[in-house]
Each structure stands twice: as C-alpha cells, then as structure tokens.
Length: 419
Image 1 (cartoon, rainbow, N blue to C red):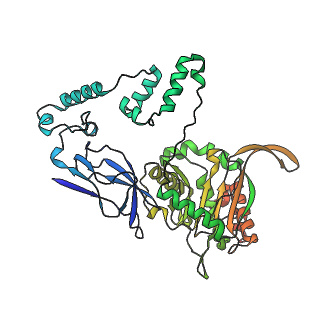
Image 2: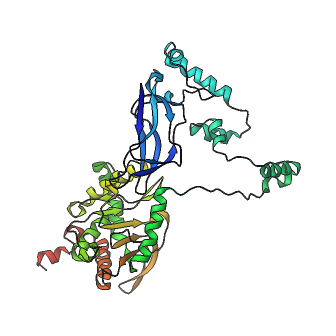
Image 3: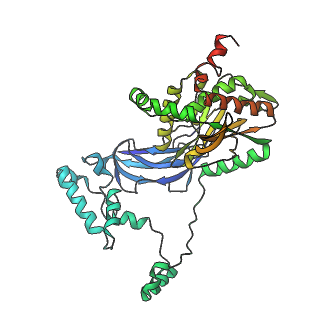
C-alpha cells in the first residue's frame, strides 16, 4: 500500500511553505513516527513524520516551494521489513536500491544487520584518516560516505593547490583557501529580516539602561539550588526571577504591556511573556501565558519545557504567537550590553546581560559585587520616558530584594502598614 505524507500547516494564514532539508535519503526504508524532513515557513519550522514503516519516495525536493496539504513524499508499506527500528533507515544497498522484503523476512534481524554491515563496509572507499578523526566519526554514528557527502565538490583549482602543496611539503600546512559558501535564506530568516527592518522604520524605538546588583539572587539560588532541584526535577535559573519581576512591574506600568492597533491602544490585563531561547534554527521566542498567576518555580518549569521543545524542533506556531512582552538574555553568550529590538506588535523588550564582578559604592565603601546591565527598548509613541525608566527601576528593586517578589513588588513592612 502507498501512503501519502502531506505538507502540514504552520498556521491559518500560511498557504505555501518550503522544503528545508530531507533527513532521510530517497529510497531509504523508514520506520513509523520517524522524522523525515524539515518544512520551513515564515513563522516556524515543522517536521514531516512517517505515519507508517516502508520505503520512502521523495516527491518534493529541498528548496521547493509547495502548497500546504500537497504530497511531499510517499511510503510503500509493502517494503516494510521486520527489522528493529534502529536498523530501518540503514537498510539500503550501495546503489540506493532497498533490500527486498523476501531477503529480509527469511533471515533473522541479527543476520540482516550483519548483511547490511558487510554491504556498507564493501561500499566505503579507501580513505586515510587519523585515529582521532575515526573515533569522532564513529561516535557520531557516521560512515565514510556520510563524511564525503558533507564535503563540497572539488574543483581544478583545489586539486592544483593540493598538488602544489605535496610538491612542496613546507607549504602543505599553509595552503590559502579562497572558498566561499553560498546558501539560500530560509523563509523564517527572510521573514525575520523583514520584521527587523520594519521595526526600525515603523517605531520610535529608544533604549534605556540600568544596572542590577545580583548578590541576593545569586546567594538565594546557590543556597537553595540543591533542594529546588530535588523537589522540582530541574535547576533554578535567573530568567524566572526576571520574568516574575517583569510581570509585577507591568502591573504598575501598564503602558509597557500595551500595543498599537491602528489608531487604538490595546492594553492586555494579562502578561504573556516571551522568553528568547537558542535552538538549532537560531533564536526563537516561545510564550509563557499568564505569568501574573505563576510562581518562580512554575515559571522556571515552563521555561525549561519550552527550551527543550525549541531544541527538539517541536515548538508549535501557537506557542510562539501572542506575547505581550519579551525577555532576551544575551548574557548567556557573554554579552555585556546591547540594545534589543522590539518584537512587534509588542511595544517593549527587556535585555539581560552577563553577570560580572565590578567595584561599586555601597554606603560610602567600595565593594566587589556581581553586577548586570539591563536594557529596555521601547516604542516611544506609546511608552513615555517616565514609565520606561520607572519600569526598569522597579525590576532593579525587586531583583536586589527578592522578598519583594512575594508581596507584589513591595516590602513586607509596606504591606504591614498598608502603604
């Protein structure tokens, strides 16, 4: 039976996508639920998943633009062997012809695996490599053919350079390369570049800065990290503290949580905060909904879950849509200071940076404290300087006195005195 694998929809408004990369070769025998290819759109990267085991036939190639719902590939279930899952994708002959079903069924899985190994060894070309290179290749589960396929085509100029280098061994280690790599931008990257330029052209973006003494949060995290991890099953980071502080600050400076819709200003009463996370496709911004109702531990758990989805390319369009504010932490990459760009239609974004020990004046004395610069980029059309500066100051106060996170941004004494 031939099973069709159709292109999934990344979102309601998207009718066309681009085939990004096939993860399995044409003619390979795949297993059910195996990831076959990456599909790119201007909003997200989705995966094509095998709905059955069998032989793959690719109909849409890398770089092709295809309609949502069209058939990207087919799977012939008649060629589905009774092999362990980890052997299925490898069950192809050197000439890309799949092993016949009759040849596989009559042998045990162990015997078939041995046949496949022999075929792979016979097909691999003789190639010199160092022991360490071979160890890296084997650890990554690659064959020599996989390595060679990752090398670009050799040109006459390349060969002349290598030939000249071998004629002059001294020059072998200093052969200059003028090679270039040129790849097409993905739809996601194209859309991102358009949005970034639009933000610069269509908003009155300004950035204000402050610095935060991280001593108390660092101490709190160090003292309770073990107990926190044992109870919740994941480590406590700094982003959760800032997300909680942001939510409390948004409650007092509501314009920072607002956005422009035509000639109207929309101010959500909820706080859906986007947390920028690193993924194989670059920086992505999944949304944590209703942060105003969550504890620091709940926020940290949500960040961990979304970060794992981003790394595994399992984020949905819905999980990256509809935020009211964004936090980006360039400090994890070593950034000391930056001016983050607003994520429209939002009106503000908070940038966090590296924590560095610096001398600061504390009650007339110089002390070394772990300090962080924070930056708020905002649309001046809707957010005034008073609110932007006050918003950052409020975050600074809460991070420097974490107990305020328990009392709506106030001191316990202020709550006691109803101030």
